[in-house]
Image 1 (cartoon, rainbow, N blue to C red):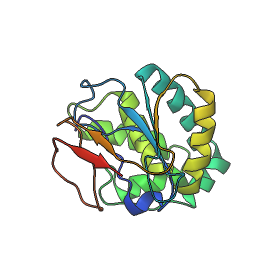
Image 2: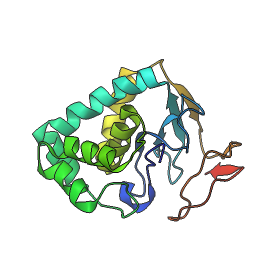
Image 3: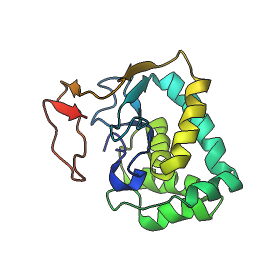
Image 4: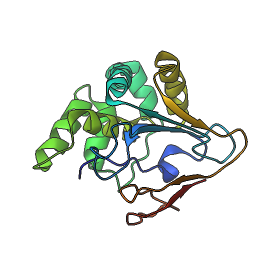
Length: 189
């Protein structure tokens, strides 16, 4: 794969955000495609969607890695863990990320070793961290990140509810918990 998809669904909770990640097939299609989706307005994930350039995504990565490397914060993240078999790391690798100080780095190395042409390091690391940082912890961390990168994002926000249509055949989303093939038009409600 060229990116590590962030499967939301039940693993992120019903009302929680998804961390910055790339969710398209080819990361060279649009360098801004590191997306973060909040779910702070009712049941509408994407009520605030932020897209950042890779240089800003590097700053996001530094903040998220501080959290996963801190034993107390890693333990707090681990209390919200919920493995999804669609994740592109094994359940054993997933659990080690919370249970071992070296688990995250080992998961990154294992993912890269399994793929002859892995995505770039930034995409791999943010993708795996997106699997690990879930639930209410993600909401708090993303608030911190957004304050730290204020002004360096492209934001699409909806006051009440809305629909985002992406006319890009390279983009696909998991809808209703199932994967769908690349679509010409994608709806995010």
